[in-house]
Amino acid sequence: MELVRIGDKVIDKDKIVRVINRVLELRTEGQSQAEAAATLGLDRSFISRLEAVGEVRKGTKIALIGFPLSNCDEIAQIAKELGIDYVWLMDDRQRWSYVRNKNGITLLNDLMRIIAALKDYDALIMVGSDMRVKVAEALMGSRVYGIELGRSPIKADVRLDPEKFREIVSSIKG
Image (cartoon, rainbow, N blue to C red):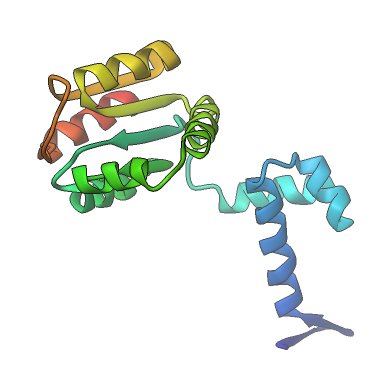
């Protein structure tokens, strides 16, 4: 416990950090400012001001899904640098492992959960075969920015040009 004296008050810095972390947890789980405030016995305006202090950016929430990629790590690093909010990249081996290690109902539930979550994003960059890009466009409409790696079925990893990827992200962000 780290204590700090301010005038005649003794403040527990660790408790402040714990409360702030809990506020952020509740907010990222989807609670409104009012709900998080009620849960923790705080004022909603405090949570609003706390978020304003830590706000890095406002803007387009972008998701990235891509497979089968040979340079997943490189693209994931660039995505992180560019502030992409959701990244799911797989090479061909990972893609087939993901599908084979789930039964039908589990796979369907996973995909439904992912599709529902993607609805919260302003843009989806879909990297894959022509067929995968078309399916994403059918589900998400004009919010999809497709990068076609080739005609379906793609049976081997394909390298995504990092500069092309950067350009697409820049155009989305404006």
